[in-house]
Image (cartoon, rainbow, N blue to C red; front, side, top):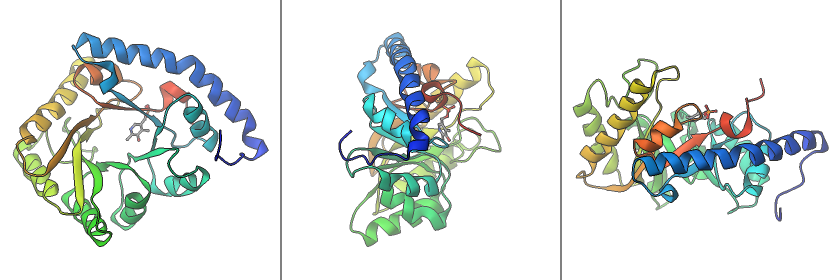
Length: 251
Ligand SMILES: *Cc1c(COP(=O)(O)O)cnc(C)c1O
């Protein structure tokens, strides 16, 4: 692939493994997304696959690009900082999808084309100040906790919907941000009904927020390897897929 530096030889075996995994897995994933979209009367092209490469060697990203996937998700800012310089600018659309400590906000704002995980007004304010200082608007999604689980981050769309909407409103008017929609994480171990409720609540929160001043997009980042078909049925426009594309992450 032009512009992508050769990887160290010790990773060549993994690179071939990633190519093979995508060759097998990606067509299945595309079919399942298309079927789920059609079940809910949606155009499959409205669902973007974000390939989550956290914990994987850069060869996974190279393989993803070769398979036609340009949207790459990383969970940690440090890993973004390590991986971004390995690829020619413009070849990868980088997504920051994990919790961001405020002291790492500058790295995320600089490297990611979209930050999915703005999980507090305080983090949003920090990112907005960074955007303003650079005379730009940082593209973000607001993360909502639509399951009510204590361990999940995000504005409390399940436990206190009014507070969540207030928070989204406060974030949407920040001058250094462009709020493109919402993101959620469903409970990892959950029955289908619980997953569906979580995703439907996130969509309802976006609908309730759509009259809010400053909301610049209608994206719904929801669905991971174990639940993306339900997420698409419930309106997801971005699925964040790791394991189902690349196999299990190295320990
Ligand atoms: C790791 C991760 C994913 C992908 O998880 P898989 O189950 O491997 O598909 C998606 N979203 C976030 C926020 C993640 O941290």
